[in-house]
Image (spheres, rainbow, N blue to C red):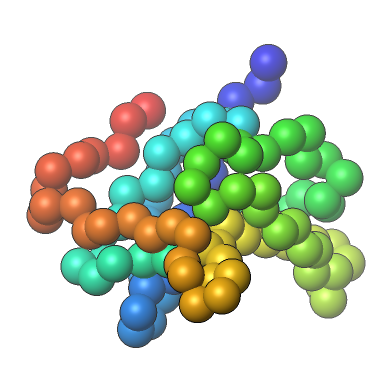
Length: 109
């Protein structure tokens, strides 16, 4: 099985999105909330790939099944965005991630 390195994970916080580096496959990975605020989702951007190359995603999490979209505005360099986001049915938020203590978790390789 080919391992995929996820170059950037954008955490959707209360304020602005931030970027972090995470390692792992799309089927099993950890994303660290290092924004300092509670986050209600995150987005993974993968460059130079089409969505048809995505073999599977991590669905056993409190955000559920992700939304996948593709940007082909530059045909030579397509991008895929995999977005995990909490929903709010009836005003009740289905998931969130508390911020990690500064320096508590380092990326693994």
